[in-house]
Amino acid sequence: MGIVERKIRQKQEVRSSILLAAWQLVEREGWQALSIRKIADAIEYSIPVIYQHFDNKEAILLEFIKQGFALLTQELQAARTVSPLPSQQLMDMARAYSKFAFEHKHYYQLMYGMGMPACETVNQVEEMQAFSQVLLQVIGEAIAQSQHPATNDFLKFHTYWSILHGLVSIQMIESQQGPNGWHDQVLEDAVNGFIQSLN
Image (cartoon, rainbow, N blue to C red; front, side, top):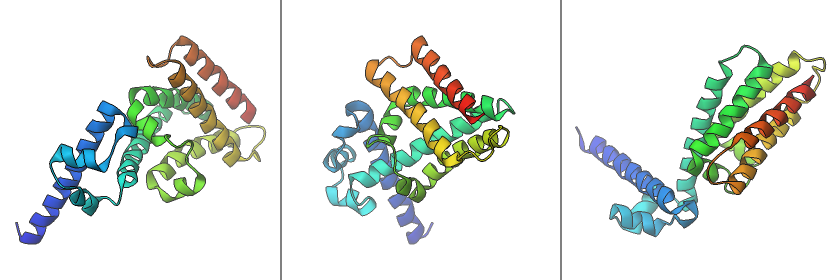
């Protein structure tokens, strides 16, 4: 292995160790407690070394946000393969979304730590775009099969996403134990109402 390849590998290893240490801090203390100094102490490097790899703490958090949306998108894509019907896919994806939020709470809280991502942010982050496209595609297919094919799919996308995020957020505030039977009933009722609104 040449000098250039070795330097590239070493840089990747340091970057990976930064992200690993940061994630361990998030899991232990919460993402609000994350700091460049704590990461540097954890991996026993100086603070300038961290800044060689990430411009600031927000850049590190963005990496985790990307990972979270990529994982969520995989879960939604898997959920939509269970049924060929777009209306049932919307229900299955809603359940998968809720399950993801509580099974990956640290990711979810990072992904939505500042509220719903703005359209400009979604358009700039590939992982968020992929997530949006999964929802938009299924909603578009459901609308196409409805009695009102001229329905605004972008509006319905925001409505659907708001329903899912809103219900998850309420449950997270009410209980640290995760979803309960009542949450599941409310989710089913809300998503069924949404699906009926498409028709």
